[in-house]
Amino acid sequence: MTSIAATAPAAGDRIRPVAIANWLLAVAALVFCMVVVGGITRLTESGLSITEWQPIAGAIPPLSPSGWAAEFAKYRATPEYREITGPAGMTLGQFQFIFFWEWAHRLLGRLIGMAFALPLLFFWLRGAIPAGYKPRLVALLALGGLQGAIGWWMVVSGLTLRTDVSHYRLAVHLLAALFILSGLVWTALDLKRLAKGHAVPVKLGGRNALLLGVVAVQLLLGAWVAGLDAGYVASDWPLMNGRFFPAGVDWSKGGLYAFSNDPFLVHFLHRWWAWAALGAVMLLARGAKRAHARPASIALHSAVGIQILLGIATVMSGIALPLAAAHQAVGALLVACAVWAAHAAGRRQVERA
Image 1 (tube, rainbow, N blue to C red):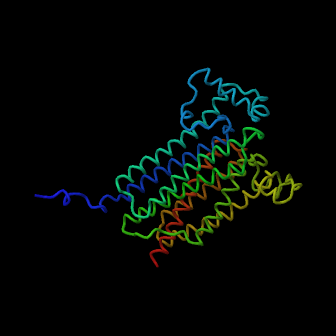
Image 2: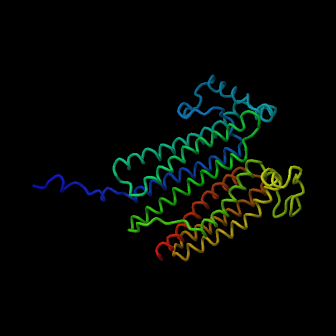
Image 3: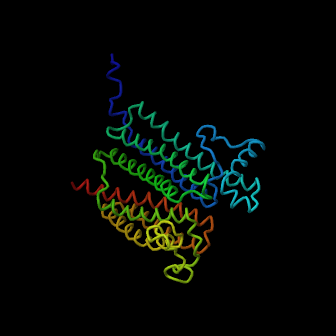
């Protein structure tokens, strides 16, 4: 008679690296959507339409005229309404439009939290998580929770004294989202390798870290451009209002202050640091190609080419919403492709060791 012990699956049989990798990539896709919706929220000036942080109750929008009136009354108490949208004659319908984007952004955040936490609990209880990966997955969960707090910290900056959110806090919020996206993709790729018998996780390495750092500077400048509405200061390219270096830079508070606060200078830096970022991306793609990861190289080349064209088109269109949203979307895809390429290059180094 066959014993129960003989028919029970071995511990190693319960490990599911491919299933966990696919789950992480699905969550990464949700984070990508979150970045896109966040960009639209910023472009439509919707971020201050919800003035309270209610993680549970806030999942349901107003369902009655009195509910909408109460939310609109809270928004009318903000500096943004008193100084900008109120004098412009904002209607309840216009308020509902901006409320929708901020609500959708927060709803996606809640969805991502559940899409990560519940499967993590399931895989954990099933004993399906490979050795060494639990701390990394818990860290990603913690980063997701921290990102929610960062989002509220950003919104708070525009509810009392300012008519918009701090561009510094906006940059932290965006870069944190892209860092989480990168962590999800990198961990998924490690798990895909594990499923093929490669137990050693890939390390980033100094060279690839430096190249990704160059790209991160461009992302930071892009966040500042968005936060300062710096895209509107010039609509020609490659010149800015007919000049290579813009004429409107305010140096009165010093160069360091102008570097991160002056819309003309931040816009100028974002335009031209793009070429440094392009060089870094080309080196990452070359490393992937050497590692025989041609799809990663092609994807990265395609993403950066489209991103440059979208950036130019966005400026020349006067920041048309569809183009600007596409620019942010492809920027997030570029980050994912850059991480893919860096992982491939790092994989080659591990296999040579």
